Amino acid sequence: MYTPSAEEIKKLREATFAPMIQCKEALVQSEGDFKKAVSWLNEKGLTKAASKSERITGAGVIDSYIHNGSQIGVLLDIRCETDFVAKTDEFKKLSHDLCLQIASMNPSWVSKEDVPEETISVQKAGWEKELVEAKKPKEMFDKIIQGKLEAFYKENCLLNQVFIKDEAGTLTVGELIAQTIAKTGENVKVGKFVRFAI
Image (cartoon, rainbow, N blue to C red; front, top):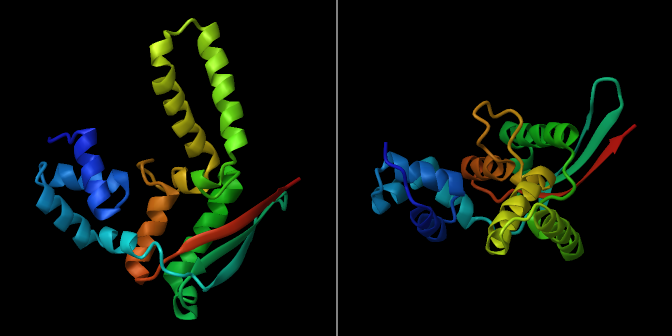
């Protein structure tokens, strides 16, 4: 089986704006043929989803979920472009799934862009201290800290989390939303959310 390089995946991502994992899959399926990989992504509707990411989301819903036992509750503001899409089963299913994700995985932010710089600085300082105490070589610090930062985003940012219903454990919430964008033909964005717990 063909294994694409990180550089090939990055190049395809920059050309199509499709999710990284889907770019890798496209290159595997096309055995490294760049044009075939782009065609594969087009067929899946993933490049279409990426092209809509800047469109204004003026409609949507406020969804809610109360977990069994009434100890955890979620309020979610999720947006799309029109009321028509907001009323579709596809959009309602996504909204419900995101409420379950938030209740289960307790993210702190929607995306990594929302994480305050101060929080990142504190995290990096803590990791650097750990590396010094573990006597790791200085030249490895940047790479290790970058890996820890990506893991931090995966744990704490909704769009970076692995979708809880994905049996393979590879589909992120961001990619799930991209699939919905491809199916509905409209931009979809998580506005904000609140998770309550007793």
